[in-house]
Every structure is written in C-alpha cells, then in structure tokens.
Length: 135
Image: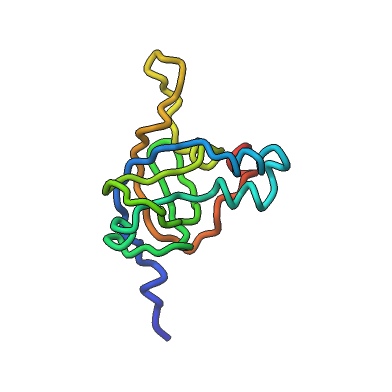
C-alpha cells in the first residue's frame, strides 16, 4: 500500500496586495444577522482579476488560504467583473479581512486597510468560521 504523496504536497503560494472596501449588501446582511450564511457569503470572499486567476491556476468558487504575519483565513475566491491590475485582490471589510490587518497604526490611530500584503494558495480546508475570528 503506497502513500498518497499528493496529500502532503503544499499548494504554491503567490504574493498579493489586498484592499478592503465597503459593500451595501454585506452591510444589510450584517444588520440582519452577523452569524448568518448570507453575511458569510458576502464577507468570506476575496475577489481577483481573471488574469491573475488564470496565471495562478485558480477558478471562481475555489477555497483559498490568505495569510500573512498577522493571521490566516480561508475564504472563497471570486472573479472580478472588471479588469484589475495584476497582483491586487479585494475583500469586503469584515472579520475575515480584519484577521490580516496589522494592529500597528503608525501613529495615525487607524489600521491600514488598503495595502495589505498577503500570500494566497489553494486549499481544501473549510472557510474560516466567524466564531474562530471573534474568539
């Protein structure tokens, strides 16, 4: 009986810059129930341009791990409806994106939500649960 080597192989990681944004649909879902599937659908996702998705071998609906020195999350990948600059991805401002934000404000009092460096890779892991983000 052989060992399934693929099980132990790590997916390639790519560096990206994340920018967070506000979304009215996500805000409405938050108002209704922050623990709902609707809120998770709008919040636990990263949006990337089709050129980067093709270059990295990703497709819409893939689960991806985003990680940096501040945190690690698993979210769903979605293709942007627009042409996006290479190396840039977008997330709605939420507990998922906040897990990757530094608490160092550089004396400004406000964390940096627009220029987050992270690594991205495919994963089979489940989307990070809200409860683990706020505990």
